[in-house]
Amino acid sequence: VQLSSGIDASLGERIEKLPHVREVIGSLMDMIAFPEEDLFAVLVNGWVADSPVWTRVELESGRRPKAGEQHVVMLGQAIARSLNKKVGDAVEIYAEPFQVVGIFSSFSVFENGAIFMPLPELQRLMDRPHHVTGYVIQVDKSGGAGRVEEVRHEIEAMEPGLAVVPTGEFVRNIAQIRVVRVMAWVTSWVALVIGAV
Image (tube, rainbow, N blue to C red):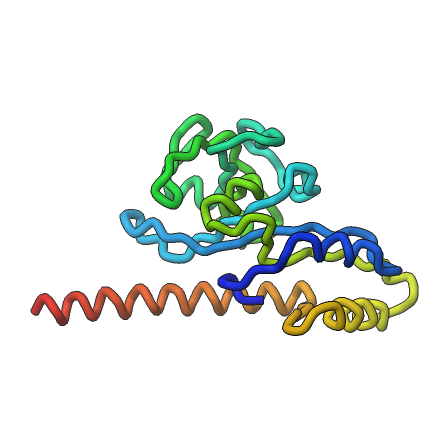
């Protein structure tokens, strides 16, 4: 699913009712830039308050956002270092100040370089109420290797245009997106320099 697209959050409830689906976690994602720090492809994730992702990552300092809390974020350890931010500091996202309430570490290099915030906040900032970018779906694989493909086809049949991608393939796609974004920024700077000359 492209980051520019959106899925109605009600789809998650329908997916949860499928046989062999153990867990459905909705998330909204975007890429932002911090040009002053030469960071041009920073992943922002919006998660619901009860998402297990909040507790799956290891809290290095501070705390996790509370349900209904506004203008707060958690930073992955890598992006916290790059921005030189610690708990209690403010970071500007979408031209609004957000307080850093926690810094976390993860087994995923992508998450270590990401910003986590409550889903309703990111939906507000992106003007996408009741929408997510996609879902992380855990499947009961007790039926064998074909179970994931079975669930994949069931979900894709729910609505036209849906794409269900295995985790490994999705991570590779995110890497490609980051490279494309960086190249776009480099091209823009080259164009500005040529224009100035």
